[in-house]
Image (tube, rainbow, N blue to C red; front, side, top):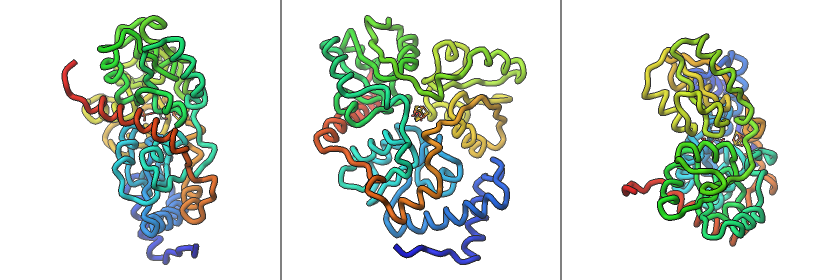
Length: 348
Ligand code: 13P
Ligand code: SF4
């Protein structure tokens, strides 16, 4: 495909647009803005030409979220919006399980992942054979599976959950079943057992996967931050350890954390999660103060503007997400069950 070339004037106006979106507040200097503008201008032009959309998970780089993403959110919001998009092509700003989810929901569309190595430690911790073995060991127990899993694992599950709805969906499952299997996040499973008042291994059966970003946060640092920043509100992702979760003011997914910041007043906020969320929060809430205990996800950060431009300009066969039709059909059923249960407002 012929390369699109912006004029000097178009480049200057794209640089000004990026500047107005808040990137300078995250440390982008004039040279960074000009480098980003040359890429975002081309990406946005190609998106129009190819009828493509870019969903961006909140852990993506800020120049992606602010410069080229069409919708930004947590795993649940992105899955829901991908199910509704009219675009021909989806270029996923996120990791493989998210792009696979988009493909499962849109088998007729082209779904491209700009970085083939963008995996997830949770997704890699379990196989479909493991799920089948768990089911055989606990007959009759429904399998609620975190969205951070492969298409094959989703296909072997009864219902998918995300951090935004895991508690609600598990409550509904427990209303009908004495035992529920939750996979693969061990720490989130322990946090859910605690909040639902269920005992591990008899009522809630869990797996041993962890997120390599969230399992490393140190609960001992929390008391130090509280002393150093009086009044700080500390928010932790539900993938963190129960010993850390016990010490914080709010626990939930990235969507819930952003909502908490929006709806509360505090002298400082600390978001114990991947660093991208804090950067986005600083841009969205410029009048609030943020202190940082964050870590980078090495998988999420594999996607950048050059890789997005590359897949739009000249996609390789290995950039396209493919899910076998029988796997996709079963996985779609489990995702649809999530949408139904997550949106269900009937009292228990
Ligand atoms: P949510 O944005 O859905 O909370 O998920 C966090 C995560 O770790 C995604 O990889
Ligand atoms: Fe996976 Fe953790 Fe990275 Fe999310 S932050 S993609 S759960 S490794």
